[in-house]
Length: 250
Ligand SMILES: [Fe+2]
Ligand SMILES: [Fe+2]
Image (tube, rainbow, N blue to C red; front, side, top):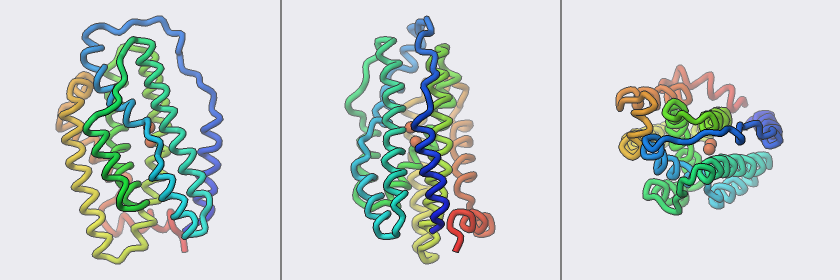
């Protein structure tokens, strides 16, 4: 593992935690009934998803950090979880301002919480990045779907943070997968693709109103999600090699 890679990312997360809130909270705006009907429940599901305590993830990261002598991984994970909770806080504050109810439970959120717990750090990050890649496309759609200047600005802020999450986690996963044998790596990658494909379908079905309002048909959404997936996880060995060299120079 490249120690400098983790030092750089720790520095980034520390810097980002200090970024001031410049969102237009004072904007005087009202949501139309049509927008509330299209966006309200969907937003509540994503707000719930952002709210995790990350207990299992932080625990896995600590063990991984200890095993590999990279303390930064544990610190990065703590800051990462705080960033996700900040996203939840921004969405909750917006929802409160507009009288939109939050959710305390949603079946898709529950499934993701369950499957990222039993199989260790690599599996937890795999499940996490699956949700985040699709979430990034969702927030782009939501930004187009809403008339609210504040919600558009919140989406932009979340997308900026998520861009970094995706870069960090994909490099981390690629370097972890590089330590596996060929068959094991191929099985992981197949499993990840199956999970990703299923999640794209479920998210489209569950959030169809926001996605359509944001200009995404199923084909467009499917393409956008897989385009992002393949950008982060190049599918041929030839494409993968430079990424591995960058993430894990030996
Ligand atoms: Fe987030
Ligand atoms: Fe994230």
